[in-house]
Image (cartoon, rainbow, N blue to C red; front, side, top):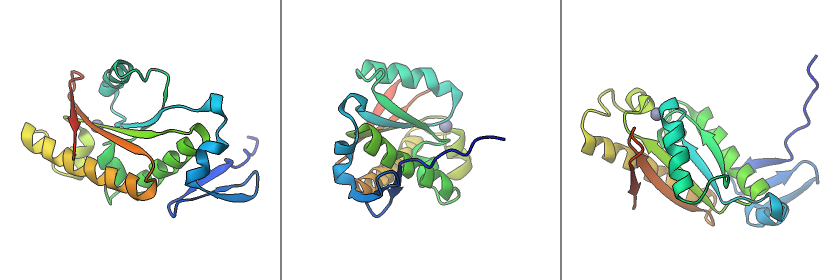
Length: 177
Ligand SMILES: [Zn+2]
């Protein structure tokens, strides 16, 4: 029989309240960095697509940004589209829980979101010809990425957000609002 795991010490509440089961106290997200031990802090949480083709390009890009070994990672099909689409609400819930954990346990200061071109989740959730026109594809991802940015800001106003659309060859476009 598998041993029963103790609950995670922290749970993320969309109402911006964190509850620590260990300490039986409530604290706001704004005090999260005080909970994380200083030597256990890191810079960012990265959201990328699960697509195997993007793993090396994403890691290379983050290394070029000086973030090698300095980020938590969540990979969800479609990245921003996976988190924000209505068809898979559990995916969004998983992501927001992880933002809370990364903030509380590792004191992250920013969320970096990397969508990519020719994404199967974009074709599945948005449009089957999502990737047929580069400008249209850019506009689709820009919409989902900026929606996600607004939601991060609503839930955790102190976190910075950076948005990118990556091509399969690792070329990156920064999405600015
Ligand atoms: Zn994808």
